[in-house]
Length: 159
Image (cartoon, rainbow, N blue to C red):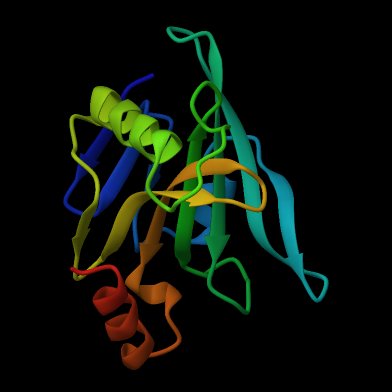
């Protein structure tokens, strides 16, 4: 599977392009099969799809989240990408073997060193210790309620 990152858009094997200007209808009608994933008060805010990576003989999981209230024109606010072979494992700190393996995997596929950030948003490997799983996470600027929250996020993530 080929991954390309250009400025602020992310291309997954020519099948799907994710960017801060992507909206729900574009992604849902783009020929990729999606399943409802996360609901918030009966509103579906996230969807999941699974790509088959024939070269690595593994699944690649992608979850996309839209800015609420969700309608056809809602913008993509974040996405989470996990390759099956390196997403699971335990690490005691936010930085560890899972996040290192994810960054290496991303570099091998996209030739981009993580973290990467800009006025558009931020991408890095993150670890969820409750579920013992790591993901490549992208948070777009549009995901934040206001400029103050965006600035706090930037300061916390040092970019």
